[in-house]
Length: 534
Image (cartoon, rainbow, N blue to C red; front, side, top):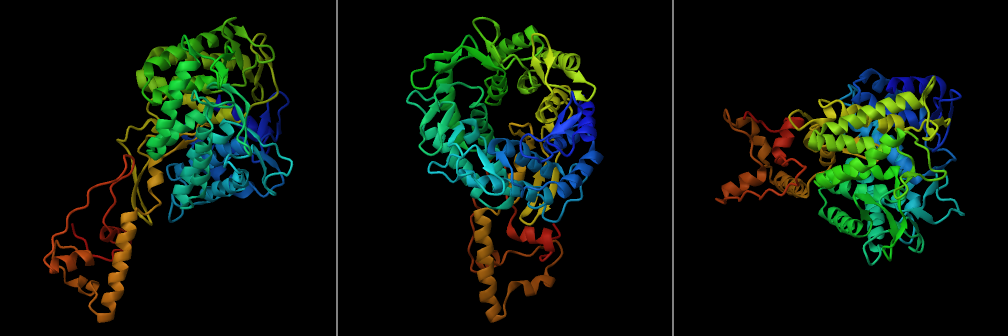
């Protein structure tokens, strides 16, 4: 399925953003980035195709330009372009790409991701810190740009932007993402809910429908995933507070409805296909029983139509007018993958089988897979969104491939030497962004000196210069160490000479980081300045 779609994109649509499968040509949709190629890149590696991954990396470096006069969605550019490039950057070494010295703290794909993200930063220059929805990649925010942005378009940056900040050392990305998250939190209603659209200048809610679906969805997703990625208790506590309000006001018989954000009264008794990510998110916080019950509700809708309609009227048990389509969205399959990892319930594999059969039977055409315009009569639309290759196929494949490297339990890993010491990568625990681009959380700990280490370096430098003046610098004695001995930190040596005993520092590393090496050990690894025979 992947190659039927991918090869026809290359033949008929590249370098346009997307394939039009009914007419076998291409179109630009989200900004003219060859979007499908960026979105599909990490899927190639998950399928095991390292040679094509390497080829596409070269194509993207040569062909993608962000200095273009195009109005781009801030949200979509972040999740698809920035997220896709970051994921591919972190997976490059595993794919056999010859990475440059300093990787993962540097590299061409990382520079491209940073360049794309910098093009989005002008959108965040608002009184509230909440971003505009659209930005011109050449000129910034257009003077007449609407200040109304959906909640998800404000709160879906922390995964990509925090990763960028940690890899590049520039805090601006994580700072703006956090400020936007906190602005939404500050403007929640008295009953703990957020609406659908807000004015980013005045912080007034324009659309006051509260729910877990379209316009809101990935805000909640990124509170959880940001909390896991960054080991951030504040983000998780924010989500758990929202979760209480969502259960209190929107949950009915394991369905989630839309309610008025200030009163909690039902405004739309509908299920939206975008809400199907929720059971997967529940599984990430350990709420597996509730997740399964909601998943089974959603699965009944799939079995009714052979796909999930965009809107489904729960009391009537049928589609909503003008919302009968299924653009091959991944969310129900995504939840199935997470829940299968948690439960091994074969029902979840049955959903995967049904999805494969439905998409093959209804959507497959000569030039790829087409959006289903109406699930009632299976009419098709001339579009294949890039998320079909980035998410839908990827989650299906991972559901049926329990031994894929993405599912690594930590028993296999790589050790990489960076300018800041040794770093463990590819040990698993990947965090998928909302476009299914996996981010290795360990990578965030590769490119920043811990503060204690910085002090250690400064102390060493001060001691170096003070001793240099008296020509008694300790390194001059390095060749005289006996067998089995290693050089001591100058500070250690001077302390011992004075008869002092140093107390070992209490370990303070976070759950996802590795204990830092002592500075002299790092020098031994990087430049063999000290002798070390241990």
